[in-house]
Structures are given as structure tokens and as C-alpha cells.
Length: 86
Image (cartoon, rainbow, N blue to C red; front, top):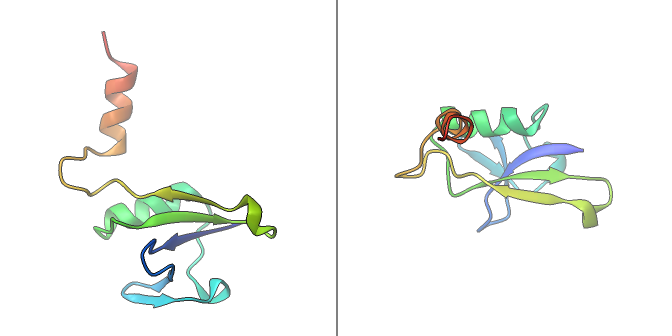
């Protein structure tokens, strides 16, 4: 499985900061989805998706990147709220 950051509007993949490619094989691959989401958060990237690409593309999954959107709290804040709710 490859973990990539994808622009859902152009369907291109992040190759390097500010550089995009349509070639899955030349895209920047992350070790796991958490690393990809952290990269987006650290670089202020949103309106994107983390794409989990499998050898058989019928199993591919795209997860929207929501951190960084206006009004959106960090994941750790949401986790804290979920686990400490009355």
C-alpha cells in the first residue's frame, strides 16, 4: 500500500512541497496515514485528501484532510474532548 496526498480536484499527487504529479510512482509516499495528515497539518495544507493506494485499485481509499480548515480544532483537541466528555 502507498500512502499519498492527493488533490481531489485535479487528481494529482504531491511530489514535493509545491510540486504535483499525475504519476503515482513519482509521488511523495508516507510511511502511514498519520504521517501524511501530520505533513498536511504542518504545512497548512487542506482541501486535499490522503489516498491509500493498493495494488488492486478497487481497494483504494481517499480520506479528506480536515485539519487546518477554519473552525476546525486539532485532532488531539477532538480526541481529548471525546475521551473526557461528561
